[in-house]
Image 1 (cartoon, rainbow, N blue to C red):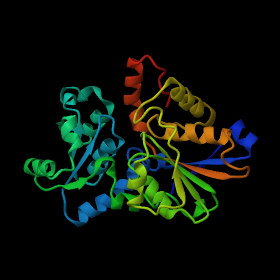
Image 2: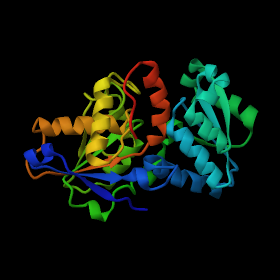
Image 3: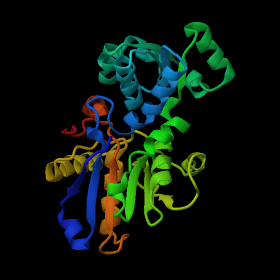
Image 4: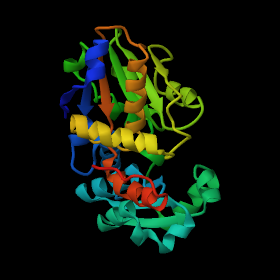
Length: 301
């Protein structure tokens, strides 16, 4: 499944003689959009091959992955279980748009403490889950594993070969790993992490070569899911000027960073850039609840 490449028209791009296109992966499926579709594709095939009837995975309160897995399970006739970080949500999930969507699409929840969640990959945690739910196919938090990378290798296609630079936001690292693996030799891949720190380099190198890419680590806005009025204003302005909706956890930070680099002459004139839109717009409703509590501007999507 190929997505369209939409050209972005902004005065800054004309001034700097940069061509910018957005690969609209957010449009490939109404509910399993962007990299979540790519990450789940081969995991679902594997689960069916091995005759699993249940998918179990992990995520936070507003997880795109949780929402996508719930719908994908329903679409493929599979039971889904979401192990959700934050035991306090057990009595509050009705107020959470992401969890309401997941529940509506058949997902069963197990709410756990943050301490338990930090140790979710331990043998003890897996044994506890097996005792409670019996046989299931497990997908890691964020959907990141070898099969997820395989799916993300299909984001780029032959029509993208003439781009000089490919950019992507970075969460767990599997999406950009797939992009790195499928990029052409002449293309440079740049990732914009949503988290603080450079530990993601090690995670990415588990699935991709060490060359041909880099991370821009100055655009996380304080860390995962951290936002500011500046970022919200930027996302709303970008939507107004381009018609392309972004979200503040991943794609908004990537686009903010990319345009900032362009403004600072990071790219030479004539450079042709393809920015990957990894979806995640389902999280905007939940984020607006948070923004309202903080008296910040709301996202217009």
